[in-house]
Length: 100
Image 1 (spheres, rainbow, N blue to C red):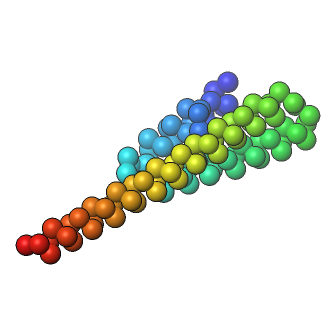
Image 2: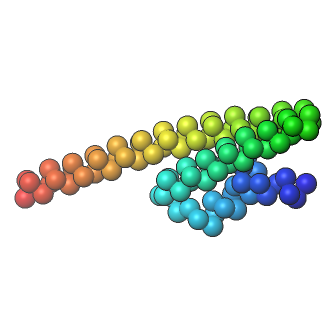
């Protein structure tokens, strides 16, 4: 149970431990990389359990893979919004400087 829970896959505790160690709140890129690692781990474990015909684990890691992909899409959306806010701030700063 402990080995399962420390896997670096999104909803598990291993993901949160790695995220707390390496990610700042503003750094979305490293968060995306950690999420890609979770997707790769999920795919490798699905293949491993498929080879040994353990269907229950295949369903578990398939659902974890779907959760990772959904979380990655949310991160990309958050990254896009953050970039738009940065561009707005830059343009607003230029406009305010040109007025003075």
